[in-house]
Image 1 (cartoon, rainbow, N blue to C red):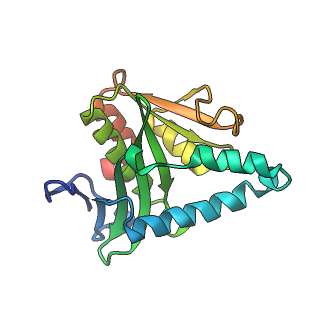
Image 2 (tube, helix red, strand yellow):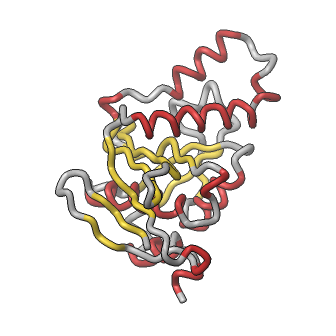
Image 3 (cartoon, rainbow, N blue to C red):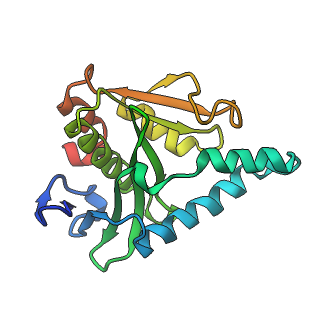
Length: 204
C-alpha cells in the first residue's frame, strides 16, 4: 500500500496499492527538509549515475563549459518548494524528487529511483506528489529537463502526459541537447493524469 505523508499536517493518507507482486509491502512518500541526509544521499547517487551516463559527452569539454553547466544545474534553497522521498516499511530510501520555482514556472527536479527500487511505481508516486503540490499552488503547468541518456525517466514523463517543449533557460546555452517537457494542468483532468501514473495492476 502507498502512503503519502504531508509534513505540514502530519496526516497520512492511503492513495493506492502497490502492484500485486508487492502486496503486503508499504511504501511511504514523505515530505522532508532539503538537507535531510536521506535526500542528500539519493541526490548524490543520482549525480553519480548521471556522470556515468553522460561521461562520453562531457569527457573532452572545456573546463569553462563544465563550470557553466554545473552553475545552470545548481538548485538554490530559496527556490525549493518541497522535497519528497519514498521509503519502505523499514525506512530504506527508495526514491527522491523536488519541486522548485524557476521564475514563474513550477519545475520537477532531481527525480531518482535507484535500480533496486524500480518497477514498483515509486517514480509515478513521486511525480504525483510534485504535480499535486504545484496544482495546489496555482500552477498552470509543470516543466522539467532531462536528456537522451535517461530513457526510463522520459518513458515515465511521457506516460504521465508530459509533452516535449523547446529547451528553456538555464539549460539552453550549456545543455542545448536537453529534452524538456511540460504537463499542462489546465488541459488534463486531475483524475486522468493520476490514473496514468498508477501501475496498471493497481488499477484492476
